[in-house]
Image (tube, rainbow, N blue to C red):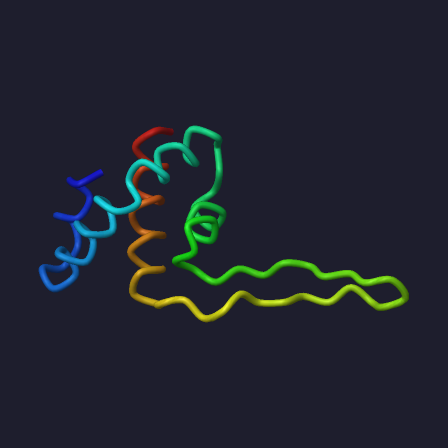
Length: 88
């Protein structure tokens, strides 16, 4: 996973390296379960996701998670996308 960070512009490489060190094991586990990049990045809470809320006698509504850091989200999606392309 660390090699993927070298593909990013120099200014993003330290963030990417930190991200991979922090989330690498979780990413590997989720990818092994065939989770998509959106699912992985939402599961480790670096990207926003939506989920459905339903209460009795109330319509189902979509609720968005608190805002995530857009840079971390982009790095996550890039890293997972790269891994997916290498695996397939």
